Amino acid sequence: MHINKKEIGRFARQLILQDFNEKKQKDIFETHITFIGLGGINSPAIVYLLYAGIRNITIIDNDVVKENNLNRQILYGEKDLGKNKAITAKKFLKRINPKSKIYIHNKKFNKKNCSKLIKKTNLVLDGTDNWDTMLNINDYCVNKNIPLLTSSITGYDGNLILFENNKKKHLCLRCIFPNEEEVDLPRCETVGVLGTAAGIIGLLSAHKIINYLIMDKKIKPEIIYFDGKNIDIKRINIYKNPNCKLLKK
Image (cartoon, rainbow, N blue to C red; front, top):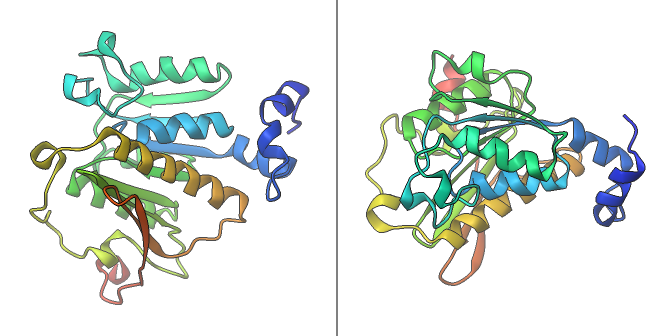
């Protein structure tokens, strides 16, 4: 793939970065990312990844835009209330890069349709907030060896984890959270969520993906935790669980 003069002009500021070059930019062009859920985290993540040069995108979301989404889901505005998120997002994103290939599925991800919804993707970003769905996404990505970035936000705080999903170095969501059923934890609808905190986790997610793509896909097994009130980032090392359910399959 050749980078034309217009593209060199558009991405000039990142092409001159020490760890960037034309080959790295081409890798970004060719990477296909699947976004499951377009809430407060994946909304800014998808925008910044598109600006960085991601051209091939799949969006999976069957929800509609609601009034209480608008404090953090930056893809939507007042005129979008009641509209399907995936369809609305595609129109927004096409204005950033009309040549981008954006595939949308107005469906809810589950065990039965996962293989139909996720095809030929290089990375998955899970922006859902349902534990059963998160486990289904995790299990599918582990089975297909697809790198998975999972993230969450509550109140002022958030976290993200990027799983390599390498068969030789197993480590997945079930390793660190082995509970099959969702634990009764504080949720956005009960304790609230600050839009800027969701935005920060979304940007950190996008930044993590870019680092992964340009740093020869090296992943440090860790939880990145953002403490919003103190504006502090902590790193928590994570390890394979020898009793992980997926290791026994």
